[in-house]
Length: 418
Length: 167
Image (cartoon, rainbow over all chains, first blue to last red; front, top):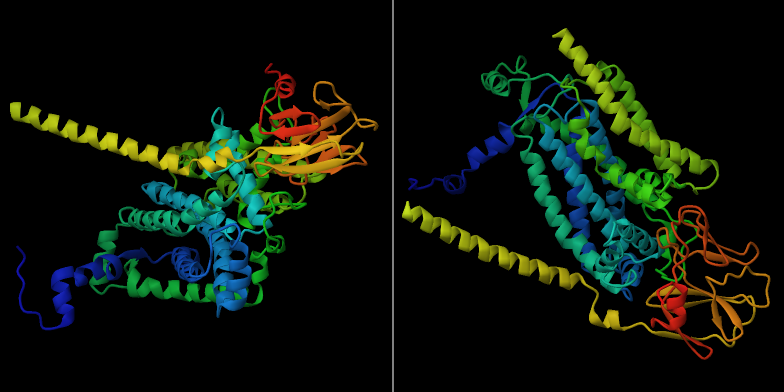
């Protein structure tokens, strides 16, 4: 049994029982981060802050929200928006944060792709991060349903219908997911449960896994350099701070994080106070009506690229119907990034601008996803349908064909040079 | 050695019971997500077709879904023996008004004589057949029974079975 002596302070008393000093070292003052990184490495802390904002604003919204098809719309648009003091603030903070959190997730993801931070031992960081992306997507979708406006309703109708494309069990599965033949009260209450309890729990669990997965391979750096973290940490602790390639997370790296976070929060609160409308679709201020589809429906901006892949294939090919091809492409688009560490056949960990063809591939991918996002919101008629089709083909080709080919070549060259 | 076997046996019994309990719990969870009996039982809609005028288009609700009814006799609307419902002298199109692509409600455009879906541009003709865009099949036929001039939605009558080729 551990020896407990009389403590001289509250801190010492707690330290004996909870090992606070050791815990602080492991998590903060001796958690080593490379020096050679830029502001893009601050996105993790930005995301953590946005998640906390979503959680806190969500708690206050939960006090007045009513998950009932008869009451939901008014509880949001009348009670919360007009009666509750600062109800509008929580709603706009929640809605805007839900939107910009995806902007930061995409920056975070593309930083990882640019610097090759998904390979050489960092596969679990990438996979847990992709799991977070998927659960955040489910969280966004289930939350979008809650105000029970026209967009809420028809997004729910269309997205749940997607499961009807699964062979054999599709039709029954759709009814099972909805708990009714159509999107109804049972659907709203179960997605409410998912949004406020189950998915947040899962997200918190995966955030823990995501952080833990960083401990062994450590954070990547701007040059993809392999750093001996133990040796560099010794230098830092010995006072040779200028020479050491690492700094402690707390209080050194966090200072830079907090600066980036500060800039980001100015942007965020500017949106919350002066430009919240971009996250509040006007169509969603009409109450849900199962008997009337709005003339043009589209998802929020962060889902547009995969939505465009879904509808990009608008004609049948042989025995495959347009809908099935679209569904398959959509399914692939949603999981393809999980395979990033294996689609990249090269062992080289370096920033994209030092990887030749990969650099071009990276920017073509980014531009293609922006094209998909823009055309995802345009009506799918005439030339738009063809642009959507070619952008969708390009997306699949880039990840499934171009990436393995380019990186295989790179692996050969790297092997030859060594 | 004998002891190890005993321990393995106890371990397997424990694992077996835990697996059975887990499977039972999963079944209960699955059933909890199922539509309630009241939801399954609700849902017969009776429509009297006699007041409808030639060319008239109506939407009624059945199980929360819109049902399109289009009266086509005495008009130049396209008629199809294998797709229309005959009630007395009348010739009707009766379909579930959800696009077979992703379930949006197409709008009836009398001028062009088509159902046009705004979501992804799908089109259906006056016989309910998919003529353009992503819809993979014609508009679905709801189960129905004919009682005089009335249409009972939710019950499978002989005319319905004939129409979907199940007779």
